[in-house]
Image 1 (cartoon, one colour):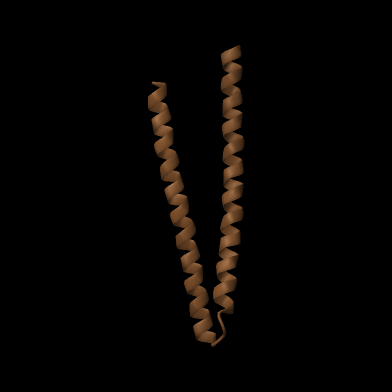
Image 2 (tube, rainbow, N blue to C red):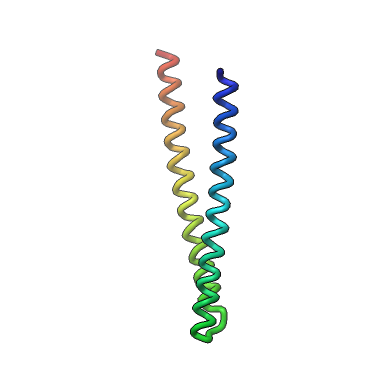
Length: 88
């Protein structure tokens, strides 16, 4: 039974990683495209394209780090609770 749970968690982790990476790439591409359109419309150098792309990458990185930290805290709390139940 433990092996089945471990495989399920591995598959879920792979799915989470794929969806997160796709979201990161797609959002960056959208911001890049919006910046390109703004630069084209305003006749500027690639100022908006670079600025919006950097803004997106920094924002998504901060969000990814915060989500990861929260998930790790939750998993550590669950692990501690399981250890306390095993001892008691």
